[in-house]
Amino acid sequence: MILGLDISTSITGYTILDNKGNIVVCDHIDLRKEKNFFLKAAQIEGTLNELRSQYFIEKVYIEQSLQSFRSGFSSAQTLSLLSKINGIVSWICYNIFGSEPLYFAATSARKECGVKVPRGQKAKEVVLQFVLDNVPEFDVEYTKFGNPRPGYGDRADSYVIARAGWIRERQETKDTD
Image (cartoon, rainbow, N blue to C red; front, side):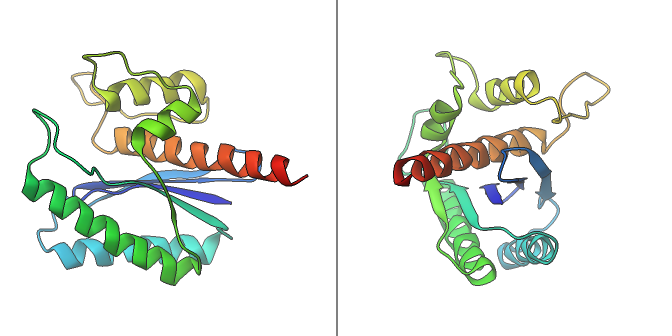
């Protein structure tokens, strides 16, 4: 099985796919109420330990943290914090699952899965709609205003990371046959 992670300090999405590419688990960890950085990491660690006890996860794929500034996006402080949590969770994954996690840039994972984000549109919204349109077992809860509840965009992002990893694994298996 493959675990895909969309790591953030506010909400971390995770998806487990079986060897046929079907969703086994797709959920998120809401970290918004926890202000302590290390307790956020501990909460993620607890969930990953729980997943390990329930599923045999062979590969972990993680969305690579942003590497550079983009106008109108994250500040230096935010990029630093994201890199820090990404590194800690990567280490936790290594300890729990016994192998180095593999990384996908968000744009590469989306391309691998056939997700096209038109210029000017928000990637998270496009990814969520793509997953809703193409993955029947993926469902979303909405607010009374018709917006997806927090965490569902992160679930969709983690699905795309897991799916891109699953595609990569199939290609590598095909190449060795």
